[in-house]
Length: 154
Image (tube, rainbow, N blue to C red; front, side):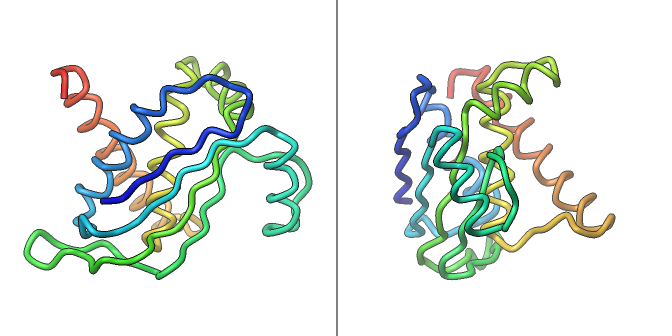
């Protein structure tokens, strides 16, 4: 899997953890090891511009996902084909505020947002209650299994 993490923000972030989480999430969703994903971290001003341009909403947001080849999750026997999964854009400053409110670390929030972004790239949404239950359930399972692996030292 080709995953790139580019931190263009002014915030120091554990890029290795984001990379490990993205690999874990894509593996859990049976995405081809040949798929490409780009994760970019930007400051509030850049995120606000993207949010306005693509969602027509003012102010910075926490995460935006830009799917490319519209890949969908695979199965163990039939993984998703290779292709360009897309881009995830994160704003660490917004994540930091959300983390404080949620009572966990900024890194935990960024891991959650990365997982959320991966699921959006794979076609999941949360506009309807049943979609939200499915997406957030998968998101929780990925984060819990990742945390278990991290505690064991990879």
